[in-house]
Structures are given as C-alpha cells and as structure tokens.
Length: 386
Image 1 (cartoon, rainbow, N blue to C red):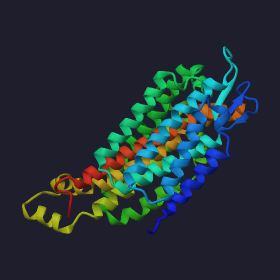
Image 2 (cartoon, one colour; image 1 turned 180 degrees about the horizontal axis):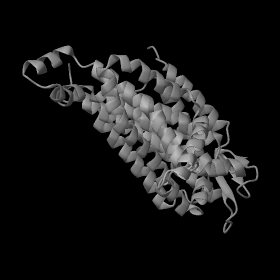
Image 3 (spheres, rainbow, N blue to C red; image 1 turned 180 degrees about the vertical axis):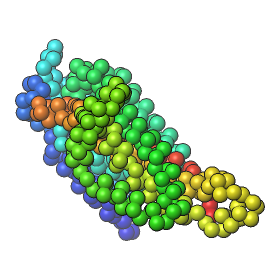
C-alpha cells in the first residue's frame, strides 16, 4: 500500500511544528511598554489545556501530511482555529496576576504562526471544495458571528489588545467610521467619475491611451508623496475659495486623503470598464441593432450588463486597496485606523498597533470575499454568457 504525501501539507506541518513546539505562545509584560517574557504553550495555559493543544497539533501534523479527505482538513482547520482563539484568551487570564491592571498578555509568534498554518490549511480546503459564492459568504458570516461571540463573552478581555481598546473605545469607533467613510466615499466618487470616463474611452479610441497613461502615472506616485503634493493646492483652495473651508476642504485632514484615494481609485475603475465593454460579444451588439435598439439602449440594456462582472472586479480591487491606503491618512490628520497604528509605533506599544492593523486586515478580507462572490454571481446570471 502506497502512502500519499501532500506537498503543501508538509509545508503546513513544518509551520505547525515550529509554531507549537518551538516558538513562544504568549508574551507576558509587567506593563504595556516593557519587553515581554516569552511563554510556551505549556507555561501559558492552565492544567492540561497546554498538553491537549500540543496533542491536537501533533495529530493535525500527521493528518495534514497524508492526503486525507478535503472535508476532514476543513473541519480540522476550523476547529483548530476556534480552539486557538479560545485558548489565547484563557492564557491571558491564567498569566495575569489577580487584581493586576498593569500587566499585559499578548499573542506571541508561536500563536500567530500556528494560526496562520491552520488558516492556510482551511483556505486550501475551501479552494479544493470550490464552494459556491453564497456558501463562501455564509461561511464568512459564521466566522464573523463566532468572533463577535468571543468578544461579547469576555473570553478575550484579558488580552492586551482588548485592554487598549477598553481605554479607547469611543475613539476607536470614531476612527472606524472615518476609515470606512474614506474608503467607501472615495470608491463611490471614483465609480461615479470613472464609469462614464471608461465608457467615453471605449467609444473614443484616441482618448483612451492618453487617459489611461495619465491615470497610470498617478498610480506610480507613492501614497505619502501624493498626500503631500495635495496639501498645498487644497490649502490654497481653503483660503481663497469662499465656503471651501466650511465644507471641510483643508491642506491637511480628510480632504487630501479623500482626494488621493479618489485619484488612486480611478485607474482600476476606468480600465476595467474599458476592458469589460471591449469584451462584449459583437453578435450581441449586432442583434441589438437588428431589433432597432438605439446606442443608449444598447449601452444600458446590453453592453453594461454584460461588462458588469469585469467592472465589479475593478471595484473590488479599489475597495481592498482603499481600505489599506486609508491607514496612511492618519499621517496628515485624516483619521482612520492608522491613528492607532502610528500612535503605537511612536509609543513602542505593539498592541496599540494591532488595534489599528487587525480591523483593517479584517475589513479588507471581508470586502474581498463579498465582492468576489458578487462578481461570480453576476457572471452566472442568465444572459451574461456570450
């Protein structure tokens, strides 16, 4: 009997072996800024929980290396991620002395590496199962509900990132709102401008190269540099244009961040609109002309519906890009989750950095899954096929 070895499984198993058996699971610090004391799984967890987790990892390594059924790998990955999420919270309550409000417990490299390995296993299993768009969104909702349940249960309250949140809860939600407004607002503005511009570039070929090349040049400008370049003109507008300052236009703050994100967003929207319209089958247009449809009717009734999946792909790129870039807006007073990232860097408080970075990553990840699903659903609707 031949034993089949999974190559990706070997890589995941190696990550698990190092993360669980060699790297520290948690860091204990007497306060938020002093260096941490590394704790292994056995030291960080009470009773037999550490041994049980190591046993689970050892079993997972064997099952992952062998070519086991995909559904088993998926269940194993999800169960292990849930166990890790619960146990890291348990380690915080175990390591923190009673009535001590200064001590901090954070996930260490072993936790992150082990979580990454199981997440990779789960992602690989999901890719092999080829779940439908609706199933992927449903799974995302289940994961979000599980995370919300852990947060509301208080299981993570002892972790330092939650302690940082506890002292900044009001500010956190204020900056979260600003982050979402910057990302979604700039996307909405870019869609309103970029969609007609893309249609125009598709119809007027001499205009196409100039517009796309110009937008491509904007994409090559580093975000910090673009933010800086916008400070002077927007400051001049705020001083010399009546009413501009009253509506929030200033040299620093949300205005230059919004304009920069808007400019970065134009190229994917315009380019994907052009590509989507160019990909509309000629037979579909000929048939529309044959039944007497006008150019406007063909555009809205035939071309845009058929090009919509490609256009939506561009919107997905923009949204994920803007969620990440909005973090940089904090450097010019634009707010968002970047406020916590840069405050944490300045104070050498990595948990404060995570308070800004983790929601940013989670938002980008969720947006990518939802818009990927929307693109797939729109592509499979009747009448979309060529």
